[in-house]
Length: 263
Image (cartoon, one colour):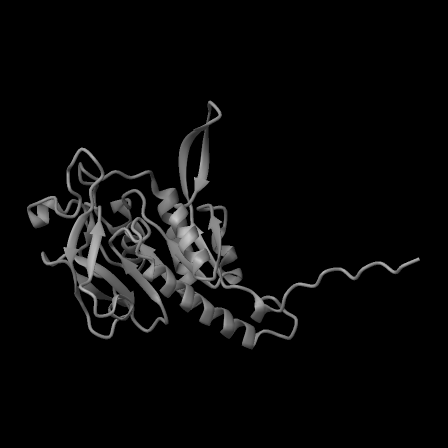
């Protein structure tokens, strides 16, 4: 009688691909004729991170998602609805559309936990605005009143990106990621950073002066971009997040006890 096969062993931490959480969006859908609410992520975020060597994990907002930060090597906070202006001390503009503070507070808590853990972070569009609010900053609630036009969210029958050649801060993560190319943003937003939060630095601007990227000072990789990273074929910021997550994973493995999968 043959002896039973040994149980499969978990791969050593160093052999695992870096795990990157993606904060989910909740939306009503109809599947097989039945209406329901689902938690979802933009497929391109999933595909870009997977192609860059990561394991993407979708995190439904709230439900103590911040407790999973210790199991992650990176975090992506995507675009979505307007941030409730009450969170930065303002009344809502008539053009501001919020879904309530539950999502905002849940993602602010998740962002805070990621920052505290030194986790690589990519915050996209709404995510960048939340990052600024997390650091005590404020937002312009309706850009056309500031810039005098709809260049950042063109008012067309079909979904159209606003396109802007960017001015980059030399030596920033954003400048290194975009390299020597003529940096251009593809955006669709009517809100943007007003007062920059303490501990953040602006690193990219549109020609009209609107802040298009911010970075956390002293953090290994905490980058916010105002444009729609993930909705074009440009995956450079996902690859940069994946690289930072890989470095995080290696540091975790180096500091973990032998055979441990997490510190």
